[in-house]
Every structure is written in C-alpha cells, then in structure tokens.
Length: 248
Image (cartoon, rainbow, N blue to C red):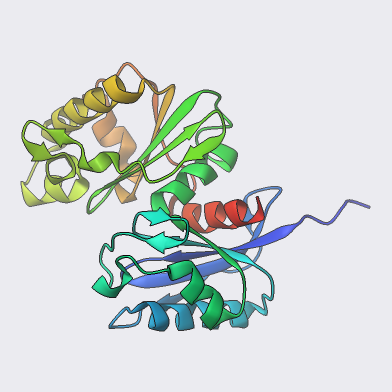
C-alpha cells in the first residue's frame, strides 16, 4: 500500500481574481479543483483576507497555508501594491490574513512563488546553479533561485535600460501597446535579457506569463547566452509555489 502524499494549500491573489487549491507536495499537482473568486472592490487587505478565508472554508482547510501577492513582501509586510488597493502599501499583510482567516500563513511575492514551483516541479527540472524566472505580462516579474534557495523580491523588471524602466519597453503589454511583431519584440527582449545576464550570469532562464504559450513564435528572435525555456505550470505555479514555501 503506497504512502499517502502530504498536502499543502496555496492561495494566489491577483488584481482581478483570488484562486486557491490544495496541493500534493510530492508531485506538485493540485489535489482538488481550483476555486476562483473575483477580487473584491475595493481590494482592501481586510476584504481580500475575507475572500481568502472563504476559499479555505470551501475546502475545509484548517491548517497553515501559503499565499502569493503582487508586491514586494518583506517578512510578511507588503511594501508595494500592483493592481490592488493602495492600503496594502506597508501593511502587515501576514498579520491581517492570520487574524481574518484564523490560520497561520506564509506570504510571498507572486513571481517568487512561481519561480520556486518551476524549479521544484516545472520547467527548471531541479536545475542546479542560478535559475531566473521572468514573467512577461503587464509588467515583468522576476524570481531568482540560487542552488535551490529563493532570493526574494528581486524586481529585475525595473532595472533601468536605455533610460527606461525595462518593463515599459519589454513586457508583453509594451508589445501590444506599440504594435510590435514577434521579431521586433524579440529584439527588445534580447536587449533586456542580455542586460540581466550581465548582472546575474544565470544558468537557466524560465519565461512565464500568458505569452509563454506562444514561446515558439517569438523565442527564435531572442538571442541569449543562457538556455531559455517556457514555464510549464502556467496559472497553477503561484498556488503550487505558495503551498510549497508554507510547508518548508
């Protein structure tokens, strides 16, 4: 008889929706159908925490859980706020979540959670050395995992490049805004990734975000010295990574 796998729980908070599910920590797969509830408006910490509690209650989850958030998170305090209410800035968000849900939580930046999941269960394949995850969407989120350990809150989408905040030129939203073809966008991505390579010298670059599904269309136009692969876990990466970090 096989040993029962241990489960964790992950919540992924976004500007439009809050998603959650139990996670099989041995396989990195969801252990139940994901639940998504629209992010309350206004998206204050208390209102969002109440929605998180609703998802946990829906699954009957009583233990601690991991939770992602679109911000820099230092020791449970959200220092920034992207696409959510400004009241999150410098909020002791972990304490709010703990008080409202009645459960212990580990709060982590959303890109960081996705990076941990991709290294453990996804595209990075437990790659040794330094792995850079970059999500190309409205902005550029980044995660750095060095020898299996997360270096949190790197925010490398905001490096200055040619006088611009890099994500304003190289994010997928910039491609759409400027009407760029894949080749033109690839040139911008090449400029961005080569700059980051010179800062980090990673061993692998994993590209996430919705555009990773079209990796074959634009990647031929991106030239880096570092091997580059598309993310595998897609929309489930944040939930999986959060659950894993909470377990650890």
